[in-house]
Image 1 (cartoon, rainbow, N blue to C red):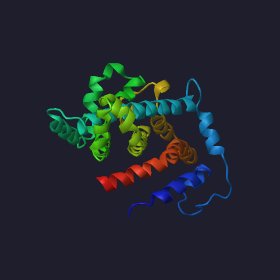
Image 2 (cartoon, rainbow, N blue to C red):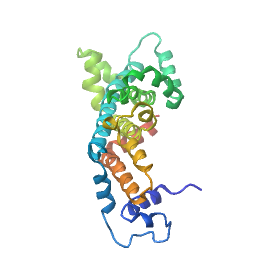
Image 3 (cartoon, rainbow, N blue to C red):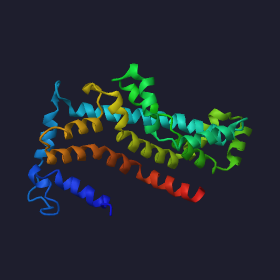
Image 4 (cartoon, rainbow, N blue to C red):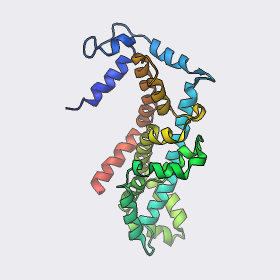
Length: 261
C-alpha cells in the first residue's frame, strides 16, 4: 500500500523542524515538541562561500531554467499546435501522428544520445534548458484545446483581413488562457524536478540546479535528516507558489479538456 502523499508532505514539513535524531523515529513523536528553524539556518549556512556554492544561486539557476523552458515552450509548442490543428497543409496529419508517437518515447531512452551530441556544451546553463523547450505532450494539449475553438471565429478574422499570425496572437491566444496555464504548470513541475539531465551534463557547482545540489547534500556523511527535510521544503516551496498563482486557470484548463476532449 503506497503512502498517502498528504501524510508524506506533512511529515516532510514537521520533520524539517525536528532535530536530526528525532526524524527517523517514525510515528513515535510525530509532532515536534518545539518548533525550531535551526535546520533551515544550517542549510543556508552550509552554502555561503565560493567553495560550497551559494544556496540562492542554486535556486536562481533552477528558476532561470524553469522560466526559459516554460516561456520558450509556451511559444514554440503553442505555435506548432496551431499549425497542426488549425492550418491546412499537406502532410499535417502525418506530422501530428509523429508528434503523438514521440509522447511514447521516455526521455531516458534518448538521454545518452543527447549526452554525446551535446558533450562539448557541458557545464553550461543553456544546454540544461534547450532539450526541454519543444515537448510533444504540450503540443498535444494545445492542439486538443485549439480544435475545440469554433472555426467561425477564424473565418470572421479572415474576413476582417487578419492573417494566420494576427489571428493566432490576437484571437486564439487570449481565448486559450486555461490551456496556457495548464501547460505552464506541468512544464514548470517537470523542469523544476529535472535530475537525470543535470547529472549527465553538470559537474561544475556554479551552474548546478537545486535538485542536483540536494542530491549532493543528501549524500554527505553522516546524513543530517532534519536538514535534508528542510532542504526538501525549500525545494518544494516555489512549486506551491506557482501552483497557487495559476490554480484558477489550471482548474479551468483541466475541466475544459475533460469536457471537450
